[in-house]
Image 1 (spheres, helix red, strand yellow):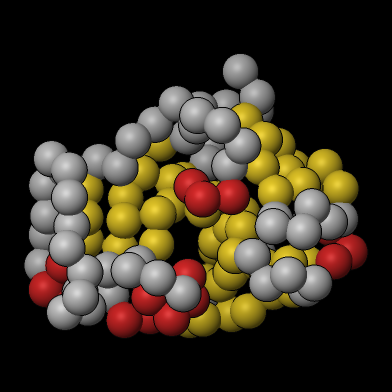
Image 2 (cartoon, rainbow, N blue to C red):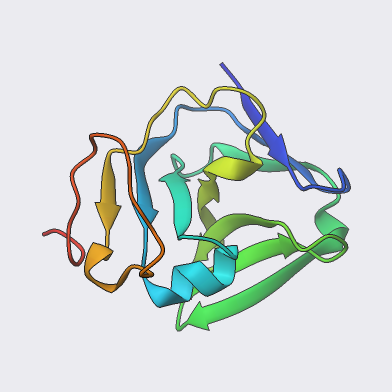
Length: 131
């Protein structure tokens, strides 16, 4: 099963040729800013399984910490993926077309969530990153 996704304006599209894993939602203040919401919904990709289908030239990259960063569409601003050491580490679940075949397995950094954020569902919640 190939997973496909892209940005809001459709200029950038990607494919993932392997199942996603380690899906989580981070509620830290940095993720709230980067994703303009209650936090991030993100899942990791198997190394080598990710490819840009179209629009790679429209991407913008932002290094948020040494070796770590984000890719987003330079036209509409959609955050598409996370980077580690220049390679795609994972994708934002909101940018995926249809059912990604995975659910959020945990909520992390709940200890610093926004006061207006009311987390639902049954996934476990951790004040910080679990060991």
